[in-house]
Amino acid sequence: MSGLVDFFGLESSLADDERLAMQSVREFVQAEVKPIIAECYERGEFPHQLIDKLGELGVLGANLPSDYGCAGMNNVAYGLVMQELEAGDSGIRSFASVQGALCMYPIYAFGSEAQRRRFLPAMAEGKLIGCFGLTEANFGSNPSGMMTRADRVGDGWLLNGSKAWITNGSIADLAIVWAKDKDGTICGFIVEKGTKGFKSKETKHKLSLRASVTAELFFEDCLIPEANRLPEAAGLKAPLMCLTQARYGIAWGVLGAAIDCFQTAVSYACERVQFSHPIAAHQLTQEKLVKMYTEICKAQLLCLQIGRMKDAGKLKPVHVSMAKMNNVSMALECARTARSILGANGIVGEYPLMRHMCNLESVYTYEGTNEIHLLVIGQHITGIAAFD
Image (spheres, rainbow, N blue to C red):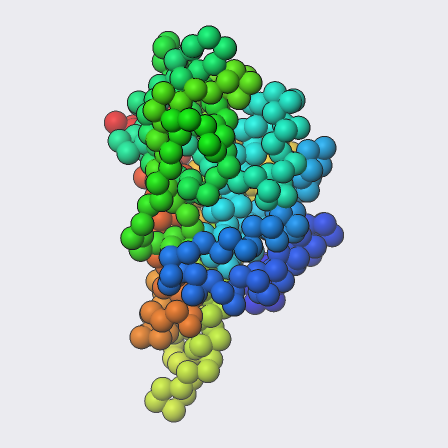
């Protein structure tokens, strides 16, 4: 929130630990992510060498309690961490977001104490990598229709089915998998790598989130011990609570991408000379910059407010829907506008704009499409569900 993008002086309202978390991750991204991420994106490779460093930095499950080896940050600090990671790349923030909000959180919220002690400390260090198996090829926005089944057999469960579009899927040591039992109740399971009948396949040829691992998961008579069932997860509410955690991080994260695009555009516009003047001297360029600046500032205010509400226990899923819907749309428009300011230079890897733009096209529809979040807010306003 410093300098050019702290128009309302929000940084002065941050606590010292919040400011320190933001600055530490900003410095990490500047030193470790930005020098390599363009080449990783171009090659379609996730930078595995960053995993241990992310663990050392304390950003994996950062807002979970220190009792389990996590940083114990408040939710504003956690949001600022997501912002700074996505300023590097959406794929880096996605890795951390999935690890913390979609894998560590359900173990913390719905798992047994034995499960928390067994998995969370190693996950916080980046020694165990997780993925979240909810989406299926035919059931994305309507996860209640999932076809993956869990049948009770002796002292365990037999999983059969598949999951699609799973971040971290083919590098994960464990998967949080959601399946229906014989009564149609959605249950959660910790499926460990190497379990017989569990396979993953990396999704190739992506044109977005190229520096992120995406995979399909397959379960064929996959026997899961009762000790690996999440005992407090029963019904669709459990995975949706996980998604609310992740969407909160996304609302903050995309601010980082928007700010990176904006700062790139300002710097370029002040240096690029056409018709004997920097293009920043032209009225239409200033209009573009002002609109970007204004929308970023508004999104910052929104994020800070939902962060304070979350820390106070007053945040509801509909608030997160508005923040995710608004901020992703804003960031995507900033990326497109910044690209237009740079002209042809905006499409080359030397600048981050096209990379952010392509990534944000995925963020626009994952973790609840823009339309689904719009309808969640519409239901809040009218009391009428209009999802079908």
